[in-house]
Amino acid sequence: STPLGELFDHGLDSWSTIFITGAIYSMFGRNDDGLSLPLPRMFCLFWNVYVCFLISHWEKYNTGVLYLPWGYDFSMITSFLMYLVTAATGTQLWKQELPGGIQPSNLLEIGCYLGNVGFTLPVALYNIRNSYRDGTGKNRPFL
Image (cartoon, rainbow, N blue to C red; front, side, top):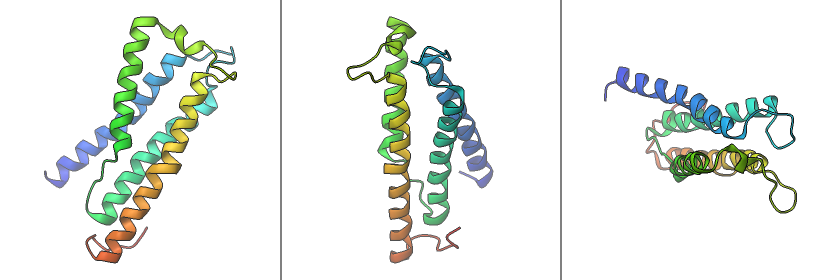
């Protein structure tokens, strides 16, 4: 694809991070019931998802290859399944406490942060390091 085509494609992808995260947030709702994510924490999740997107493209900038980690596929399949379950059962399913007093919204939040810090960032740094070491990347300035 042309540089203009890539810019257009990645621009649309960056916008979709907002809508995908917002759609998942709508399943949990915005209430003061203790079972929903408060708005400031949801705002942090929006940024977390967007930073993952930026890290993947920063990796492409340095290596010349856009690695789409399995985490992206996993997140798309998981969100699809969550939409199906919500369509069949309603949003009240996500308002029930799990064993140990844990709310599903908190599990989702923890999973998003661990996915970014625990998987996306280390894999990107590893791929960038390998591209510089092996001379396979674009060998541009690190930042």
